[in-house]
Amino acid sequence: MQQAQRWIRFERAGKTGFGTLDGHKVREHRGDMFDYPEATGHVFDLDELKLLTPTQPSKVIALWNNFHALGEKLKLPVPAEPLYLLKAPNSFLAAGEPIRKPLCEGKVVFEGELGIVIGKTCTAVTEEAALDHVFGYTCANDVTVADILNRDASFAQWARAKGFDTFCPMGPVVATGLDPATLTVTTLLDGAARQNYPISDMRFSVQQLVSLISLDMTLHPGDVILCGTSVGVGSMKPGSLVEVEINGIGKLSNRFG
Image 1 (cartoon, helix red, strand yellow):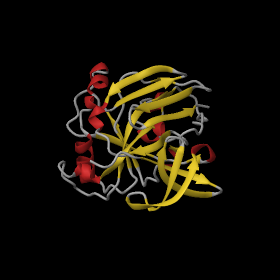
Image 2 (cartoon, rainbow, N blue to C red):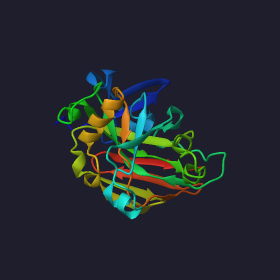
Image 3 (cartoon, one colour):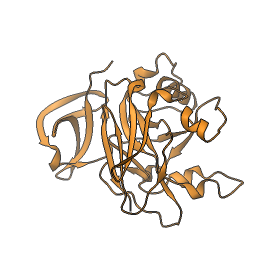
Image 4 (cartoon, rainbow, N blue to C red):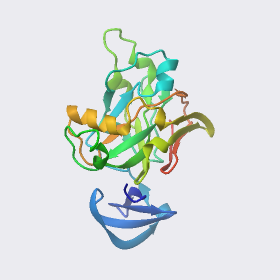
């Protein structure tokens, strides 16, 4: 297993950089985060940095119906294979940045999720080799306009409902050296816990997701797979603070509206 570290991307004095988070200090690195990055020796206070999304994904893949508890609550059929959609690049959002209220009307909901961060290009990898292609894990919020999803009986509008600007907050870090099966996702709305569920309840494990999705499309370093969500999804009101917290990773905080 990789050494436990928390990697962060940032902007400082108009330049982008990355490094490891150690308390409230960031140890700057250079090169490629995923391929033998080198420490520069510079150390910055976290407060002097503007956080960026933890990676620059070519795509974010989001799972549907991947947790037993939610599937059973909604009486959904058990999927034979991962069911997923793509989140549009315009939706990617850094920790601390506001989630913009859509210009259309409708109920906007939060979905706290674990994000798998790919570290090595993979095409058709086996389940046994899948974790060799995983760099680490991050927190994510798969924001959705729920009213749009099924209002046209002829076409489920996944891309639109989940693809609005700022609808994919991720971060604040990518944590390495974790066993995802031991993680728990907690989502707080204005300080009150609304979701608290174990990753071990996933229908498809991290290894299975990476392997099966890589049969369909090549996954590149920095790409993120959102593992899906569980019970407790709820609506946000303008001004609401949504926090997604995962042990070993940290807390992703964004205000809505």
